[in-house]
Image (tube, rainbow, N blue to C red; front, side, top):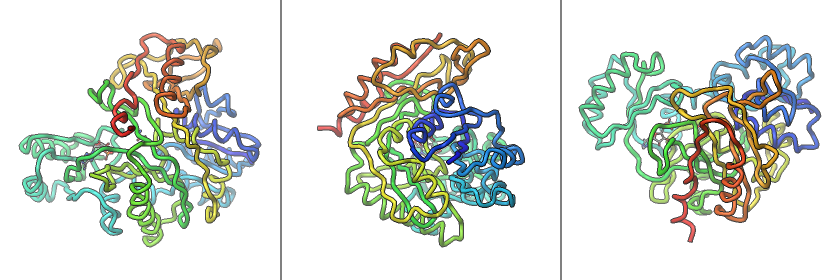
Length: 428
Ligand code: AMP
Ligand code: GLY
């Protein structure tokens, strides 16, 4: 089978690594990929938002399956374009059409969906400049902290959590006046949920689903969860507080009603659903939906999947997931993300990376890397490389990752040394 994988991050390297293990794979193309994905297949310089170019590529290379990694091309209708062209209409695509991608692309859409289908989430009100007074009145009914979310995609920066009511009211005005551009023309005000977060991943064909391993990621740049938000500095799977009882609640109260809700609403959905959840005293509630896998969560989820990923993805894309079982390793997988100094602010690109040959017992998933004109692997993004390891428990897995992190060298590199430490209290 020939597969086209769209994306260029650590998530796509992890997906490509797992796909490359499948006997069903003939040729894997990654567009545009990075210095790690080219070890699993062939990188191709295709712009995912240039739909005619993607369609021509699918035809030319006899692609049998398209897997879309990031949300942006999905929200911009890549799946719709492939399905609407008579030459590629029958090619299965993993990743929803633009309508389904609104689960991530519009917070208002996602909240209304959850309310309509009785899926546990924070209470909310959706506000525009025309009903700002209603927004202020709603804030007055809430207790601090106050949660304000730009409705649209805002590169992970559109959520504000504020301790002070007056500040919340003034930020509401600023957001509606264009603080995050058109993304905040509508603002969702939410009740604050306290608890501990985790991510649960589902692969669905719109009828049936498989639940993938859950994971916890570490979003802040600084140790002990301090400083600015990043794309993710590390991850651990499994999550010790996500026990059987909790995961049963997730399936019954969230996964099933989500898949059934899409169907009831007439939204065709083939792809991943990423549930950002809060464990509120043992009860799961949805913080957000994403329409893709998480990054760096994929870098700990893929190594734990024992089943053939290509078979599962092909079945999901073709609507044939019913009866498929996913085998998951009991081992723990941890990843440590190495980032460029300065990230998530300004950082340099183009620094030479060395030490790959010394790494033993870990899997390297490249994120922001590329091969330069001289054949060197160089940094090419804020998050540079994820060092993932499997172990019999969290500590064994982390010890392997941290030992190998020390071999990988590039100027100004930074990583967190406390990934997974907060989970010790759940591991007796
Ligand atoms: P989101 O982009 O919706 O995932 O929000 C970003 C982050 O803000 C989440 O990962 C949570 O840490 C936090 N957050 C969002 N919504 C809430 C909420 N209603 N209550 C508490 N924390 C929240
Ligand atoms: N790690 C969080 C995300 O992928 O959105």
